[in-house]
Amino acid sequence: MKYRNTYVKVSLKNITSNVSKMIQKYHDYQYYFGVVKADSYGHYGNETVRAIIKGGCNYLAVSSLEEALKIRVEEPTIPILCLGIIPPSYLKIAEENNITITVTSLNYLKELTKTSFQKLKIHLKLNTGMNRLGFKEKQELNEAYQLIKQCEGIVLEGIYTHIYEATSLKNTEKQFSEFEELCAQINLNSIPIVHITASDATALYPKCSYVNGCRFGIMMYGFSKDPDLQLDSTFQLRSEIIQIQTLRKGETVGYDGIYQATEEKERIGVVSIGYADGIVRANCGRTVTINHKKYPIVGNICMDMLFVKIDDTIKEHDEVILIKDVEDVKRIAKYLNTVEHEVLCSIGKRVPRIYE
Image (cartoon, rainbow, N blue to C red; front, side):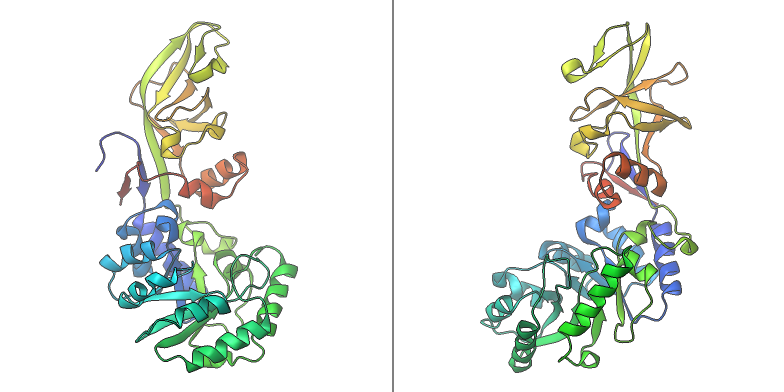
């Protein structure tokens, strides 16, 4: 429901098309994980999830049990992998809802074996260099592998790792080697799903013979290191000018008066979006688009509104485009010294998503 003219426009058609193009290009995998954590990278909605499934993803991946259960209500059959750690006390809920869990250490595995399961599917995560989650020592992994064999009700469905710097050939090759070394005493052919690469790494590196799964993340939304894919943008952020203020030279605008008019009759457009919507104050100085022309954000961004220095061609209720396409997101990420993922995820749920 939309009660102000501030919203994100999500192109479901482009999401489905992007996924389809990716699967056509990387067609030699068996399992395609659509990573829909963080509300599908800020796209929100079961509509987005359905568009990803329609494109061909046959497995979903999320960060938490909460995310998994939210999807399970609308998608009762598709497999869902939780990439994060689920506290052992909630694992029965995961099993009851057919949620596959990630096991990252021997201690965690021993904890979950204290509970009786009928069929709890697990994936082992290996730490091959990112040093965030996962088995790092071969002895610990081998002990876990043997323990799983003895546990009725625990099904080892998959094993995986995460590439932390896909653009570095040296580091990525080192991670593949580390994965193979850790698994030296494990028959990978006996494990149904082996997945290593996510979006960029899938695009940049050839498939290994023992790998049959890959994970699609931000690539589904148009971001790719592979120009041949010709992916489309899926996310636009729009608002409007709700009032125009005319300043005399020397007058200030907004909290703390950090912006001062440098000329007489300087026009300031007030836009109905602020840091509570995800446009943090660091955006001050970057440009937005109004009527196909760029205008700078000035002054301190408020909780619910921001200010744009405009010219005489702009009028109240003119549309303001804060994010137009993939290139806009890249530009904003560079301006904010961050990554494209954060730009998308920062636009909160207070901003409605309009699907088309």
